[in-house]
Image (cartoon, rainbow, N blue to C red; front, side, top):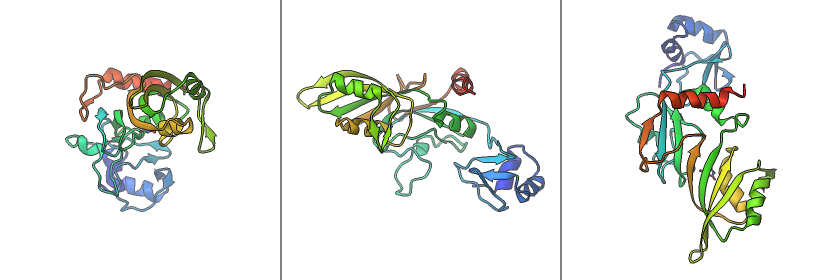
Length: 241
Ligand code: URA
C-alpha cells in the first residue's frame, strides 16, 4: 500500500511535497480522523478527505458480482478465508464491496473504489431497496408476512416495514421460500428478522440491489457496470440530497 502523500498526489490533489504540508496542517482526514503522520500507509478501504472533501484515489470503477457461498465480503480476512475481492483479482484498482453479504449468502454484490458513492449507497438515508429470497424453516403464514410488513423487533430495535411474499412451501422438508424486500442493511438483517418470527434462515440469496440483478450470471461471475447503470446508481442517491 502507498504512503498517504503519494496517494494524494496520484489523486491529483497536489504535489507530494505540498500534500505533506497539507497533512502537517491537519487538513487531511483518514476515515474521518485527522491524520498528521506523514508515512501513514493507506489501506485499501481507507477513505481520505482533504478539507472534508473526499478524494478519489483512483479512476472510479464499478463491478457487479454474483457472490458464491463460502467467500467473505471483505478485503482481508483475519481467518484467511477467500474474499470476494480475490474473485476479481484481475482488477487493478483497490476495490471493496458495498456493504456485506454473509459468508454463506449468495447473489448480487456491488464492488467499487468510489468511496463517496459506496458510503451514500450504504447510508440508511438513501435506503436502497434490496430483495432477498430466503429458504426458511417451517411453514410461513399470512400472519408472519404481516408481521414482517409491520416490522419485527430484533436487537431491541424494530425493523422498518419490509415487503414480503411467500413463494413456496415444501411440506416434506418443512421449508418455506419467501421473498423479502428491505431498505435497511444491518448486520445479518434478514437472518435476524426471520429468527425473530421463528423461521430461521437455511439459505439466503440476494436477487436485487436497487435495479441491479445477476440474472444470467453464473455463481462467481462478475462484470463491469455499464455507464448508464453507474449513472442510475448515482441518481438513486442524488435525488434525496
Ligand atoms: N441479511 C443477512 O442476514 N445476511 C446477508 O448476507 C444479507 C442480509
